[in-house]
Length: 383
Ligand SMILES: *Cc1c(COP(=O)(O)O)cnc(C)c1O
Image 1 (cartoon, helix red, strand yellow):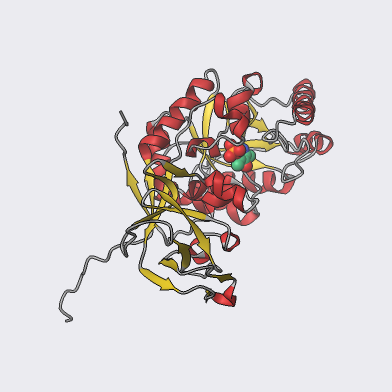
Image 2 (cartoon, helix red, strand yellow):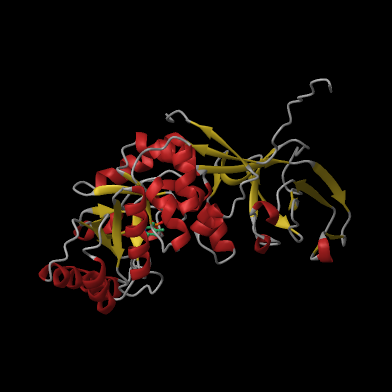
């Protein structure tokens, strides 16, 4: 037998997840969502924050349901002891129905053959499956347009082992504040629900809204609201900042692992895309586009060192990034570097990063790879 060897290896690059901030955001949103069910959307590994701890905190903070888009993520939650209602907010394939029925997941229905497959599987396992019909009112992602919905109901509403618990849609232009388009989609939704009801097809839970509707349009809350990005501390659009106070949940940080003093006119990194203008101090940090720190940030992004902004220089590689620390006094190897978060008086948000590379907050957060350890903390209230 080999001698036991278990050294402590420091994780240099980590994503710190503040569950107290997450809890606060859920409570803030609950103040807006007063009469409707609260479905916490934690798809895409909880927008990069780690799905299991976030699910558990969402339940503690009072979420009525959890929403994901992949059956795999839902099953991961069940296997980790999450017994709360979980709703699948995307189209599924026949290969998924067995797990959906077995794990008591609430499924979306956006085609007849899935309704039939779920009914058959329900019969096999002798379990009724809760389903929500997905109406396409203009996003044209998954779901069915109103004309087909009626036909689907004619053919499938009376299938055994299906509990038609809900009907929903998802808006295409609400985050942009395009209320003309959004209200048109909303009216189409209401009209369709009415027509279905007149034909005997009733759906108790009707829902249309995500974060933007949660924050701005209480008139569209219906029976349930489905906030996602706002749970993680970001309003979908900056105009909403004055409407709700939220706290960013993720801090992304690393440390300087090497410092170089380089003379003027030195080209650095792959392709030599940055050339020093003078005698410059360049630091290396162990994070790259292989970690989800976008390559587009090459020669564009900023990080914080000793409370000051340092620019990303040269081309970001899979695991390493160069930063220019020439104007920051006393920088040393081992110094903490903040990529997302606050240091001293300065803050870099996921929204700042998104702006530098014409992306959005969702992409910046959800891109942070799983290999970066998430460290869960409960930061004490400041002041
Ligand atoms: C992602 C998603 C949401 C949450 O959207 P946010 O804008 O992040 O709040 C809600 N509903 C559906 C169907 C979604 O796909």
